[in-house]
Image (cartoon, rainbow, N blue to C red; front, top):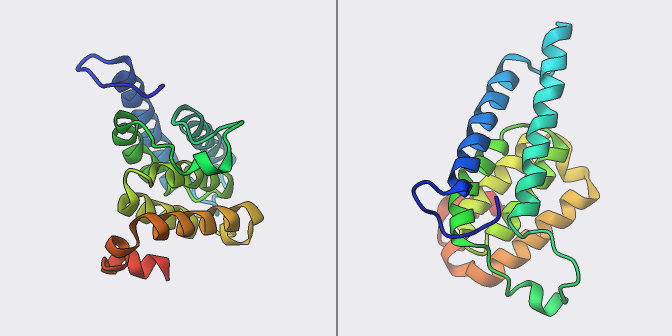
Length: 173
């Protein structure tokens, strides 16, 4: 899933097709097996679905370049995600935002913060969906830090466009 130029039979596209299908299946399981489920099989299915969703989110975070080591802070903001990766990953991340699990939401948000350098509006909407859809995320120290980092970055880079967009402005508030 490493970023590079997409071709019709590109392995990256095939990988994302698989991940997209898997994400849809995870969301299907979660739609049936809610947190209030008393059926043991549904509860196990829900736990497995959340684990798979979290694993997908972690892999996208690592594959997309959001995770870095040894990058000086002054160079961090100049890193731009690969356009082919952004185009393929955003739809998956937008759907993963609906999982409702704090750990999954955090991985999704971290990746979206990085991808927001290319797609600020779309990333902001998905980030707020993930944060609001995962009860308790706002109370997590890392969650709070990720949200502040996002708002600092987006407002510094694309302030005028986002603040003139009613939906984005509502979400920032």
